[in-house]
Amino acid sequence: MTFETEAMIAQEPETADLVPPEASVVPIIESVGASSFPKVLRRRLDRFFADPSISPKADRAMWVKIAVGLAVLVGTWIVLYTFRPDSWKFVAIYLLGGLAQTFLLLNIAHDSNHNAISSRPLVNKTLNYVFDLCGISSYMWRILHHRGHHSCINLHGEDDALSGRGIFRFTPYESRAPWHRFQHIYALFLYAMFSLDYVFVRDFQHFFLPTHGYLKRTKHPLREYVTLFAGKAFYLTYMLILPVLVLGKSPLLVAGAFLLVHLIVGLSVTLVFQTTHTIDSTYFPADRSEFDNGVYHIFATTADYATENPLVGWLAGGLNHHIVHHLCPFVCHTHYAPLTRIVKETAEEFGVPYRQHTTMTQAIRHHLILLKQLGNEN
Image (cartoon, rainbow, N blue to C red; front, side, top):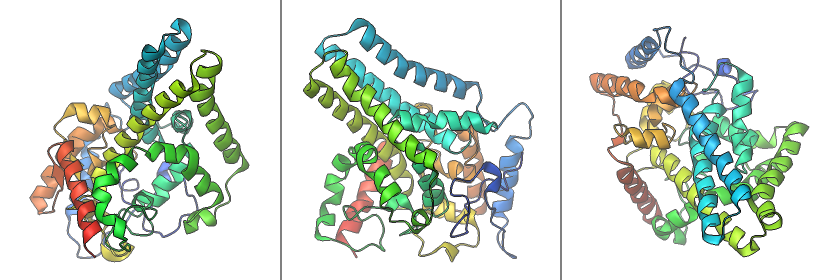
């Protein structure tokens, strides 16, 4: 397998296919006289998969994670409708289902979004519907994550992950408002609303009132509009309507459990991602052409955390190994740990700064430090 056509971030400002297949990602050509670091790093990453017994797609551990995640989610609903538990037991089992959704989003939906689970497109496409199962449009997430993030990491006005919608100031290029001085205080509370925002607001906004130029110029297939509304209806039916109508639970109890699930999903997913790009040591390029090679762009704008903690990697879908994720987006995350060791050793050898925090708590702290700095300084 050759990573050269897979791993570098695309530099074209627009792509014909906003949801590119694996082979269509445009490689960055190294300029004459540039350091050999990108070439050496790519060769070493290639070498890891030289053994034909090691596939860059899902291994046994990944299939176990998929089975466990889906089994827990389905199992919680079987238990609810089979045993019809009383109020506090209902909430506990309902919340367990919410934890399963968080696990599925980070571990299965994200990898399938990158075609990293299987070499068969149908397998990835099917598993990508986990997003819709959790109330989020898989189609729109896929567009925004590929075109609105991987191709423009930490670029103000392009990277959708930096869209603070006036509530947050995530880059030094964004105008500072008076309330931003408190953003490091209210951030965690609003992050907990992240998934609710996607379910009820953001997906519809991107479809019908888009702000990104590439979305305005895109004609979405009719089937994606149907999937959008069908997915939302299915999600709200099994999460809110059926517990009231079939189980006879109080609408207030169900609504409260639903809110708690989203507090868990929203806060967990947001912190896993925010701590990889928006911290006080990462860089925010002024434009796409600032780096001669996309590898340097990735190293400057991305940070890892808790890479020596296998539990964090297992729960967070390997996204704590974020530099490798951007270098090898089509590789299943269960391979990230050994690839990260290659990245760290090669970066140290060539004197390229490698950003990391030993724990996720440290990463969260440095994210909040950045928010405080951006909220108080122009």
